[in-house]
Amino acid sequence: MKRVIAAAVVATATLVASCGGTVTPSAAPSPTLRAGIPTPVEQTATPVLPEQGEVAMTVAEGTKAAYIVREQLARLDFPNDAVGITKQVEGAVVFKADGTVDAERSRLRVDLRTLNSDESRRDNFVRENTLQTSRFPFAELAVQRVEGLSWPLPTSGHAEFQVHGDMTIHGVTKPLTWQVTATFSKSSVSGQATTNFKFGDFNMSVPRVFVVLSVEDNIQLRIEFEMRRTG
Image (cartoon, rainbow, N blue to C red; front, side):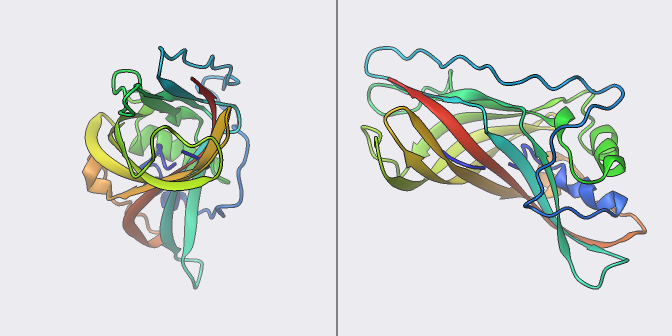
């Protein structure tokens, strides 16, 4: 799995529109400390130690999760994408000796409290009203299976495949399929994973704010991943 969100993380994209700001997908602001928001912790994840014949891929520094939502603001004559990004992603995916996913140990988690766009008012609204991060601080993906990836796993080159898992956002768990492109080496794998869903899938409402003419009922999550490979 490589580059990547959403995210988680997630349904957040929806509120992006509510404050009337704009964000471009290329903008990836670093997490900003705000009152009541925990200080982001640098990732120091220790690679999962696989058993004999297994392969584990642990999230490493450089991984980012994002949500993307298309909106039409009243002050603009054209639609634009609202984007929120966080670097607070952790977890691992473990393959058993037969090439199947060890679902018990294959989980990814995104800290929704650290999602940032280019507008702090939007971020606060998303955290407090849409995601309610005081109650539901994380988005989690429980990976169930991978489809279209050869076994043994490649140690070089590129691959496209699908990851199927149960996504939990805002206290709701739903199955989602991620489209993944990845580049493999003997010690790492990097790439991008994306998925889409509607607001209502996770009990969220499309924002209705006077400064926003419309919000597309489609949220894209994107994860740009860097993972350490062991086994």
